[in-house]
Image (cartoon, rainbow, N blue to C red; front, side, top):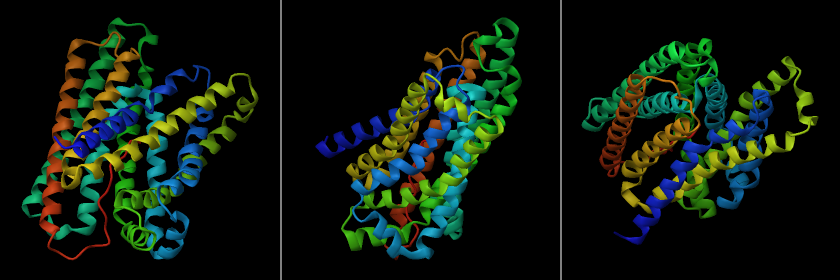
Length: 366
């Protein structure tokens, strides 16, 4: 095995660990910490500070690239980034409602399905009846099936914990159905990151040609636009909650330093997943889209669920509910692999065609 392949797979594994773990620190912010006191700083770090201060160190001329691309080049990434911000905010809520395991599985399943089909239908609807179009469609259907199976696991989990476990053993039972809906909605909206990225071709072109960035580096210029677009929706909702619940004062209370540290760790894990995926996929060459995407998303789903079990979210749940969750994860991984294969076949089919301004979307962790 070549050194680049080993390095690439190692980077993808690190990225998956970051993606599957970014929600874990929220468990240690303190039970009395209002949701918005933790997630407000998290979104501020993710959408403003990190892309503004760190991304320019990765992609040379990031701000000049955005200026040169003009309004036509940056508008769609920013607009769909706004919708992604709503989805990320909803994912944060679903963690609180139904826990890490189910939130990760349902969000990632819906996100993969919608994120895989959305750009395909927008930019290449005529290819729906081709071989790779059929494979992509099959992958989306399998992912949606995985979401349904995980939803069944959630219902069984609630019933078994209600029958034989204390109320503190899991998420509030009255929040389960609401959490499932929020998690599903978060996945659909988070998929807008993929759609936003598919409109970043002009930005990538300017970044590579005018500033000499590699493709994976240029992708960070697009990512910055998307994250900036999510600032108003994600941070705006948290600000609304702070005013509505009158919780601004929590930032002056003892222990806020720990909360801010937790938010920063979450943000670094979140954006670290983006960095490690970009580097890892580039090391795998032509297989970066197929093998890299499938490996990254599969491991991220698994890691997220392992964290859920380690934090006792499934304490008191029946074996049947756990079996359904495991089955759902297996189905999701199968769907990811099928979708990645379709993306690879699509790339092979388009090699001889003129380059489009649409760019390959990258997976999301939130």
